[in-house]
Amino acid sequence: MSFLSNKTINQSFLKPYKISMILAAKHRKKSHFDSLVLLVKVILIFIVKKKYYAQITKIDFDFSGQKS
Image (cartoon, rainbow, N blue to C red):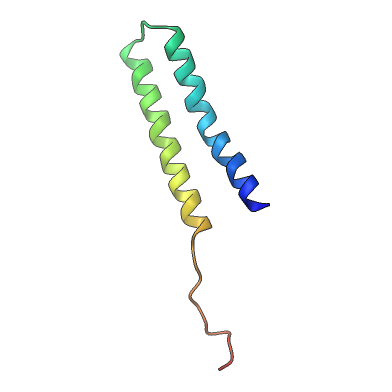
């Protein structure tokens, strides 16, 4: 179940990037500002994904609550 939700989240993260690339392909003449905005979007997507996956894969090694 969680795999499906992770896949959906991944697609939602990439959606703005895909839309930007489609628009960029339709309009060949781009300004430097448009290229910069697209680069910033891609960087932000990777930063958000990195933080999200770090939260998912965090393992709690605190065993103080266990009885020996």
